[in-house]
Image (cartoon, rainbow, N blue to C red; front, side, top):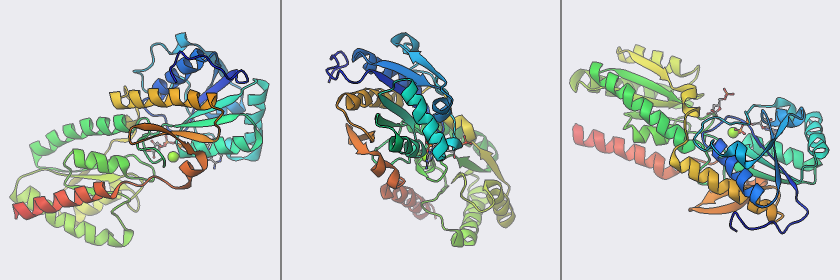
Length: 346
Ligand code: ADP
Ligand code: F6P
Ligand code: MG
């Protein structure tokens, strides 16, 4: 369907859109695409502010093409985002539904992660309008789509930062531990670790707490080799929320066992901000248009995904059932490159 095709679905008149959960670069590009595609179909678009809080408190605005004409390059989200614990309660869900009814909303598009889609499913329990999800989170942990909006930008931002850390690490033959985001999954950590030629990647996919002491001992030996004999820097990337008592504890334990200072650098929220890279702008544009197409086709309880370069509809229930895993080929690639380095250098 082209953007200029007229809406032949006379029933649908008002679409609501909101952004929820951790903001991600490209959310604005998705809002823009939703508004442009909806307007082209003669739908009116209402934006709700601050994630599901805006639904619960009826805080909204009308969105026209004019409101979105210069936002594709902006990080964050013009609609604001939030976590909204109240939506996890029946009372909160009923309040949200009441707002949708008062405003005569026919379809709700939510741009967010798996948690946001659970919220959307909860609303659908009490509301007969159409609900469509667009996956937007830097974590890339949503099942049913090859990529989520924001992931590529976050990875590139982290690479840019770590390349700089490597410069200063090289200058002093120093050990750095860089903590990366990704609440419960290592998509960012593995992709960034490989891209920055990190000497070690420690993430949910290759770490078990019983191996803690063995990992520290091996690292200590490798660090001594690198720093004392080869006069090189040593970079470890580690996923947030992984090491017992946190990444600072990891750096301290490593320093103690190796006798060489390991400095922690937590990249943190820098990974969530900034102008989206082309890949996220394009993905968001395709997904926003596909969301309106889905509404036009009377679809509901669906997430828009991209699989093998094609837009697909995935049941929300399937998208939230499992967290998307880091591909084994990526974990193997890191393992193999380390093994090859060790083999050729000893
Ligand atoms: P993300 O959408 O990025 O995964 P969260 O997990 O924080 O981020 O979820 C965002 C919001 O979605 C929550 O603050 C809450 O409002 C809503 N939400 C999450 N889980 C549920 C749930 N089980 N039931 C209802 N709403 C939920
Ligand atoms: O889900 C995106 C994310 O940035 C995660 O990578 C991170 O663990 C979390 O959000 C941080 O959440 P908050 O903004 O609530 O501190
Ligand atoms: Mg999530």
